Length: 206
Image (tube, rainbow, N blue to C red; front, side):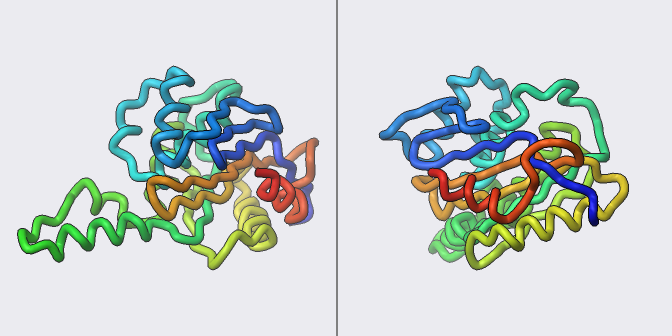
């Protein structure tokens, strides 16, 4: 598509730091992984008990999306014009490993709570359910962070005339102690143009 796409807002979570549009939302130098995400959840005053049942990938996506959308008007109204497109390298590998342990144990007791998260696209579903989105939801596993590929796929989503905006970005949670996320809201209109150079800049700014 030739129409200009822009980044309206962005959220970066890494190394005990949460930022939105360049401003620090929360900082805890000793914060790590899912424990840090739980701390952000509590300090933000969120009330979504399902959060504590989520795996690390979904928790990271949930918190990043909550920060990203915190000032948006008209949330929690069903909409079909917003896509959710997330990218990762390890995907749900940590959940796959943990689930496999439950079926290779001598007691052989497959864990339903782990099985639920053995698909990398569960995080997109969690965000869509929370926000009542009914547009495209897709998860992509890449070898490594690739801003050009991310921007290309996000732009392709707008080829669908029903898509007016997209919540997109990178989430990497190889285990419960390591969380690295960059989510952004892309839309048609004025603002910082959505380019691979700009997304790379946001990602590298840890």
